[in-house]
Structures are given as structure tokens and as C-alpha cells.
Image (cartoon, rainbow, N blue to C red; front, side):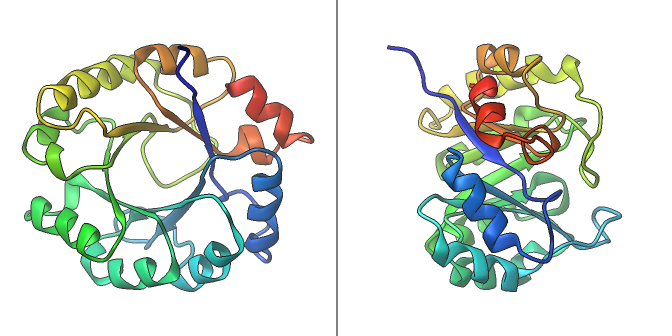
Length: 217
């Protein structure tokens, strides 16, 4: 049976004044998940949205929201994003010395735990937290800005992550890919092992988001 590819539009490039309406529009167009980029201006150079935006979006949707916390102190924000209704909370491996504890705190808050890896971060970190993970986010650009060029040399990292997860108690863990995803690389990403394709400008900048998502799949 053919594996179904999930598509998670990033709303970073949407109308920031009405993200609830923008998210509903993407849900109607066929999105499987909404990707919410949360940046603190410290871990990455850009400042975006907080848990209040998530609280406005989540109750109006029938699909999950993944809060991707690109922040220096994620432990301080997890309770608020959990209370807002995010099904997934994804944190970065690069900033936390007590990663297992942090991921377990996401689970304890009632959410699914995700772990993001920057382009230069080795996949070996997954070996020690695989049983706790629900999602791994492979970054194929350096986080912080939309519209960056996709790094094709990282496709082998997706395959390496899948193999490591399967051998370390994480066979059910989903692999998501974020960064310059479009219809010219989506097939290769899925072939490498991606379950979820996160795309921003390719979808939200399109005159027909439903067609853009169809092309990704």
C-alpha cells in the first residue's frame, strides 16, 4: 500500500493579522497539519508569535497544530502552548542539556513530543531519546527565515534518522522536513523517508494552495 504523505503548511508567510482565518483556509484546502513557527529573536534572529496566537487558532481547527519552538528557553513556554491546544510541541536539540526531561515534560503536558535538528546537528542524539519521541523535524535550511534555498545534501540525513529511530525504539515516530520544500524536491524527500512535508511560501504564496499541496503529494 502506498504511504500517504502529510502536508503541513507553515503560516509564517501568511497575513499575520488574521492567522485564524489563514489557518482555516489552509485546512479547507487540504492541509493535514498547521506548522506554527515560534521564534524568540534570541535562538534565531527573528521574533514571531506567542501562545496567544496558538490559542486563537487551535480551537477553530480539526487538524493538529505543531508549535515549532525556535526559542532559547522552551521549558518556560511548553505549558502555555499545551494549554492553547497544540497537539505537537517541537523543541530544538541544540539548546537543551536535559533533553529527555524536556521531551517528557511535553508528554506530561498532554502533547506529542517533537525534536528538531538543525542542518549541522548529527542524528545520533535521537538514539537516546527515541522512545519518547512522536516526531522528528529535519531542518533543510538554517532556522529563522522563510524562503531559503533547500539543502539537498541533507536528504541522506532523513534516511539516517529513519534507520536510527527504527533501531532505537522509535518505529512509530514521524519524520517531518522543513526548509525550501517544493514540488521539485518533495518526491526525493519522501523517498528518503519523510512522512510530513512542511512548506511555507510554496503553499501560502500560491494562488491555489490546494493545487500546491496536491503537487507536493
